[in-house]
Image (cartoon, rainbow, N blue to C red):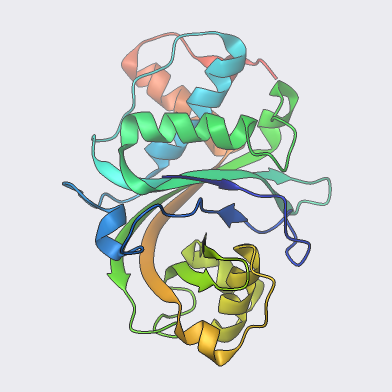
Length: 255
């Protein structure tokens, strides 16, 4: 299940928040933690090499040069790729964030979502070649999926959230997710995060205690690594020099 950005929610500042909308689950028994991590899954740690590979993917998209091989072990893991852009004032603003809650082989998954989040996040115009020097990339690998006991059974700053609940008035099931850093970055309490997530799912009814208690919540954790374009250039140059092959993509001065 791919998870992509939406452009539906005026209550969130989409320049700073990864707004993620999950398609409704077509299952009879609802969503459970094991649904998203079925099959053999290892839990690798996000590294600089993964962010390097994201920049490689985007750079070669514009340069047309061969894509370097990934310099990290293969694994299966749910993942997200986030691009931030440095503004003229030095602030980082969201430029794209898309990922999957289901395990993917990370060599292909990181490359695919690096390009998808940069070029196909519907809230933004596609990233251009001229913007690359202003970008920062973050890779998030999702781990430790657990069924929560109730909608408050999670910790701000530690857990990401995936909720599912019935919207009886609309006659449908609603679902949405936030990555682990979102609630903490926004300064939300657990209650505020849940209410925001309910609105994010498209729910327009009252946030009563009864509705909240009906929520099925899966909590998860993540490991993350961020890399700026400047650091990318240095690491790419070191790699190219040590491996003795021609510099690739934007390390050769294409801006």
